[in-house]
Image (cartoon, rainbow, N blue to C red):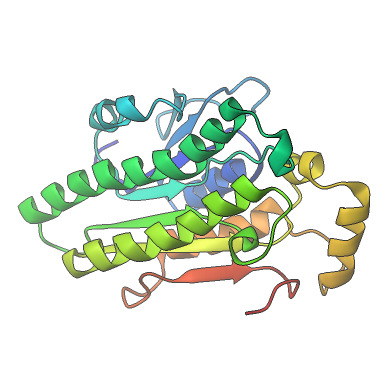
Length: 243
Protein backbone atom coordinates (compact mmCIF):
# COMPACT_ATOMS: atom_id res chain seq x y z
CA UNK A 1 0.00 0.00 0.00
CA UNK A 2 2.82 2.48 -0.81
CA UNK A 3 2.00 6.15 -1.29
CA UNK A 4 -1.17 6.07 0.79
CA UNK A 5 -1.84 6.73 4.44
CA UNK A 6 -2.37 3.37 6.11
CA UNK A 7 -4.60 2.86 9.16
CA UNK A 8 -4.70 -0.24 11.35
CA UNK A 9 -8.18 -0.62 12.86
CA UNK A 10 -8.80 -3.29 15.50
CA UNK A 11 -12.24 -4.76 16.10
CA UNK A 12 -13.01 -3.82 12.50
CA UNK A 13 -15.48 -6.50 11.40
CA UNK A 14 -18.67 -4.92 12.67
CA UNK A 15 -20.20 -2.16 14.78
CA UNK A 16 -18.07 0.89 15.54
CA UNK A 17 -14.96 -0.60 13.97
CA UNK A 18 -16.80 -1.31 10.73
CA UNK A 19 -18.02 2.29 10.60
CA UNK A 20 -14.48 3.56 11.25
CA UNK A 21 -13.23 1.53 8.28
CA UNK A 22 -15.79 3.23 6.03
CA UNK A 23 -15.02 6.71 7.37
CA UNK A 24 -11.27 6.36 6.90
CA UNK A 25 -11.63 4.74 3.48
CA UNK A 26 -13.79 7.67 2.35
CA UNK A 27 -10.95 9.96 3.44
CA UNK A 28 -8.48 8.11 1.22
CA UNK A 29 -6.86 5.79 3.73
CA UNK A 30 -5.82 2.26 2.95
CA UNK A 31 -7.00 0.05 5.79
CA UNK A 32 -5.65 -2.94 7.65
CA UNK A 33 -8.80 -4.29 9.32
CA UNK A 34 -8.04 -6.60 12.24
CA UNK A 35 -10.53 -8.80 14.05
CA UNK A 36 -10.82 -12.20 15.65
CA UNK A 37 -13.45 -13.33 13.15
CA UNK A 38 -14.87 -11.79 9.97
CA UNK A 39 -17.74 -14.28 9.68
CA UNK A 40 -20.92 -12.32 9.05
CA UNK A 41 -19.00 -9.15 8.19
CA UNK A 42 -19.55 -7.50 4.83
CA UNK A 43 -15.93 -6.38 4.55
CA UNK A 44 -14.29 -7.64 1.36
CA UNK A 45 -10.54 -7.63 0.87
CA UNK A 46 -9.29 -5.37 -1.92
CA UNK A 47 -6.23 -3.43 -3.00
CA UNK A 48 -6.99 -0.81 -0.36
CA UNK A 49 -8.37 -3.10 2.36
CA UNK A 50 -6.53 -5.98 4.01
CA UNK A 51 -8.34 -8.30 6.43
CA UNK A 52 -6.22 -9.71 9.25
CA UNK A 53 -7.54 -12.35 11.65
CA UNK A 54 -5.84 -12.16 15.02
CA UNK A 55 -6.69 -13.04 18.62
CA UNK A 56 -5.74 -10.03 20.74
CA UNK A 57 -5.44 -12.19 23.84
CA UNK A 58 -2.16 -13.36 22.28
CA UNK A 59 -0.14 -10.43 23.63
CA UNK A 60 3.20 -12.12 23.01
CA UNK A 61 2.53 -12.34 19.28
CA UNK A 62 1.65 -8.69 18.71
CA UNK A 63 5.20 -7.50 17.97
CA UNK A 64 5.57 -10.09 15.20
CA UNK A 65 2.10 -9.22 13.89
CA UNK A 66 2.96 -5.52 13.63
CA UNK A 67 6.28 -6.32 11.94
CA UNK A 68 4.41 -8.34 9.31
CA UNK A 69 1.97 -5.55 8.44
CA UNK A 70 4.37 -3.00 7.03
CA UNK A 71 3.79 0.73 7.21
CA UNK A 72 1.17 2.04 9.66
CA UNK A 73 0.46 5.78 9.79
CA UNK A 74 -2.58 5.62 12.07
CA UNK A 75 -3.53 3.12 14.77
CA UNK A 76 -7.14 2.89 15.92
CA UNK A 77 -7.48 0.78 19.08
CA UNK A 78 -11.18 -0.02 18.85
CA UNK A 79 -11.42 -3.71 19.80
CA UNK A 80 -13.05 -4.39 23.14
CA UNK A 81 -15.17 -6.83 25.09
CA UNK A 82 -17.91 -6.12 27.61
CA UNK A 83 -18.98 -9.29 29.41
CA UNK A 84 -21.78 -7.42 31.20
CA UNK A 85 -21.26 -9.40 34.41
CA UNK A 86 -21.55 -8.53 38.07
CA UNK A 87 -18.24 -8.84 39.88
CA UNK A 88 -19.22 -12.10 41.62
CA UNK A 89 -20.16 -13.67 38.28
CA UNK A 90 -16.79 -13.13 36.61
CA UNK A 91 -14.74 -16.24 36.00
CA UNK A 92 -10.97 -15.95 35.92
CA UNK A 93 -11.07 -16.58 32.17
CA UNK A 94 -13.61 -13.78 31.57
CA UNK A 95 -11.61 -11.35 33.69
CA UNK A 96 -8.31 -12.16 31.97
CA UNK A 97 -9.90 -11.86 28.52
CA UNK A 98 -11.28 -8.41 29.35
CA UNK A 99 -7.90 -7.29 30.67
CA UNK A 100 -6.08 -8.68 27.63
CA UNK A 101 -8.33 -7.35 24.87
CA UNK A 102 -9.29 -4.02 26.44
CA UNK A 103 -6.02 -3.09 28.14
CA UNK A 104 -2.93 -5.19 27.48
CA UNK A 105 -3.33 -5.55 23.71
CA UNK A 106 -3.76 -1.84 22.94
CA UNK A 107 -0.76 -0.99 25.13
CA UNK A 108 1.38 -3.50 23.23
CA UNK A 109 0.04 -2.29 19.90
CA UNK A 110 0.92 1.30 20.74
CA UNK A 111 4.36 0.26 21.96
CA UNK A 112 5.22 -1.66 18.81
CA UNK A 113 3.46 0.52 16.23
CA UNK A 114 4.97 3.71 17.67
CA UNK A 115 8.46 2.24 17.32
CA UNK A 116 7.80 1.73 13.61
CA UNK A 117 6.32 5.23 13.26
CA UNK A 118 9.36 6.82 14.89
CA UNK A 119 11.86 4.82 12.84
CA UNK A 120 10.14 5.91 9.64
CA UNK A 121 9.94 9.53 10.86
CA UNK A 122 13.65 9.61 11.63
CA UNK A 123 14.38 8.41 8.10
CA UNK A 124 11.89 10.83 6.51
CA UNK A 125 11.30 13.66 9.02
CA UNK A 126 8.50 15.53 7.26
CA UNK A 127 5.03 15.95 8.73
CA UNK A 128 3.72 14.15 11.80
CA UNK A 129 5.24 10.84 12.85
CA UNK A 130 1.84 9.21 13.36
CA UNK A 131 -1.56 9.32 15.03
CA UNK A 132 -3.12 6.96 17.54
CA UNK A 133 -6.77 6.96 18.61
CA UNK A 134 -8.01 4.81 21.49
CA UNK A 135 -11.66 3.94 22.11
CA UNK A 136 -12.55 4.16 25.79
CA UNK A 137 -16.03 4.79 27.28
CA UNK A 138 -17.83 7.04 29.73
CA UNK A 139 -17.73 3.91 31.91
CA UNK A 140 -14.18 5.05 32.71
CA UNK A 141 -15.54 7.98 34.72
CA UNK A 142 -18.39 6.45 36.71
CA UNK A 143 -19.35 3.59 38.97
CA UNK A 144 -20.16 0.87 36.46
CA UNK A 145 -22.11 -2.33 37.11
CA UNK A 146 -19.56 -4.28 35.03
CA UNK A 147 -16.59 -3.52 37.26
CA UNK A 148 -13.85 -5.05 35.11
CA UNK A 149 -15.15 -3.31 32.00
CA UNK A 150 -15.04 0.01 33.84
CA UNK A 151 -11.55 -0.72 35.14
CA UNK A 152 -10.20 -1.45 31.67
CA UNK A 153 -11.82 1.62 30.16
CA UNK A 154 -10.34 3.80 32.91
CA UNK A 155 -7.00 2.21 32.14
CA UNK A 156 -7.31 3.30 28.51
CA UNK A 157 -7.70 6.91 29.64
CA UNK A 158 -4.59 6.57 31.78
CA UNK A 159 -2.37 5.01 29.13
CA UNK A 160 -3.62 7.47 26.49
CA UNK A 161 -2.24 10.32 28.58
CA UNK A 162 0.93 8.44 29.48
CA UNK A 163 1.71 7.58 25.86
CA UNK A 164 0.88 11.14 24.76
CA UNK A 165 3.44 12.46 27.25
CA UNK A 166 5.99 9.93 26.01
CA UNK A 167 5.36 10.14 22.27
CA UNK A 168 3.98 13.65 21.75
CA UNK A 169 7.39 15.37 21.89
CA UNK A 170 8.51 12.96 19.15
CA UNK A 171 5.66 13.85 16.80
CA UNK A 172 3.00 11.23 17.54
CA UNK A 173 -0.50 12.29 18.54
CA UNK A 174 -2.26 10.01 21.03
CA UNK A 175 -5.88 10.79 21.83
CA UNK A 176 -8.98 8.92 22.96
CA UNK A 177 -12.72 8.99 22.37
CA UNK A 178 -15.17 8.20 25.17
CA UNK A 179 -18.59 7.36 23.72
CA UNK A 180 -21.84 7.16 25.57
CA UNK A 181 -24.55 4.76 24.36
CA UNK A 182 -23.93 3.77 20.73
CA UNK A 183 -26.25 1.44 18.82
CA UNK A 184 -24.10 -1.70 18.63
CA UNK A 185 -24.51 -5.39 19.36
CA UNK A 186 -22.30 -4.90 22.43
CA UNK A 187 -24.69 -2.34 23.92
CA UNK A 188 -27.75 -4.38 23.02
CA UNK A 189 -26.31 -7.47 24.73
CA UNK A 190 -24.96 -5.71 27.81
CA UNK A 191 -27.72 -3.22 28.64
CA UNK A 192 -30.87 -4.57 30.28
CA UNK A 193 -34.11 -3.03 28.92
CA UNK A 194 -34.65 -0.92 32.04
CA UNK A 195 -31.06 0.33 31.92
CA UNK A 196 -31.42 1.19 28.24
CA UNK A 197 -34.64 3.12 28.93
CA UNK A 198 -32.89 5.05 31.69
CA UNK A 199 -30.02 5.96 29.36
CA UNK A 200 -32.42 7.19 26.68
CA UNK A 201 -34.00 9.58 29.18
CA UNK A 202 -30.58 11.08 29.93
CA UNK A 203 -29.50 11.44 26.29
CA UNK A 204 -30.64 14.80 24.92
CA UNK A 205 -31.85 13.40 21.59
CA UNK A 206 -33.45 10.41 23.38
CA UNK A 207 -31.75 7.93 21.07
CA UNK A 208 -28.52 6.00 20.87
CA UNK A 209 -25.73 7.43 18.79
CA UNK A 210 -24.87 5.65 15.58
CA UNK A 211 -21.54 4.00 14.84
CA UNK A 212 -21.23 6.33 11.85
CA UNK A 213 -21.54 9.43 14.05
CA UNK A 214 -18.84 8.18 16.38
CA UNK A 215 -16.65 7.12 13.46
CA UNK A 216 -16.63 10.68 12.15
CA UNK A 217 -15.06 11.88 15.41
CA UNK A 218 -12.44 9.13 15.14
CA UNK A 219 -11.78 10.04 11.50
CA UNK A 220 -11.22 13.68 12.46
CA UNK A 221 -8.69 12.69 15.12
CA UNK A 222 -6.96 10.34 12.69
CA UNK A 223 -6.79 12.77 9.78
CA UNK A 224 -7.55 16.40 10.55
CA UNK A 225 -7.12 17.23 14.24
CA UNK A 226 -4.47 19.92 14.84
CA UNK A 227 -1.15 18.71 16.18
CA UNK A 228 -1.65 20.64 19.43
CA UNK A 229 -4.45 18.22 20.34
CA UNK A 230 -2.58 15.49 22.20
CA UNK A 231 -3.42 13.47 25.30
CA UNK A 232 -7.08 14.45 25.03
CA UNK A 233 -10.16 12.36 25.79
CA UNK A 234 -13.16 13.52 23.76
CA UNK A 235 -16.58 12.65 25.17
CA UNK A 236 -19.20 11.72 22.56
CA UNK A 237 -22.28 11.34 24.74
CA UNK A 238 -25.09 13.62 23.52
CA UNK A 239 -25.31 15.06 27.01
CA UNK A 240 -25.81 11.85 28.97
CA UNK A 241 -22.51 12.40 30.77
CA UNK A 242 -21.02 15.84 31.35
CA UNK A 243 -17.74 16.42 33.16
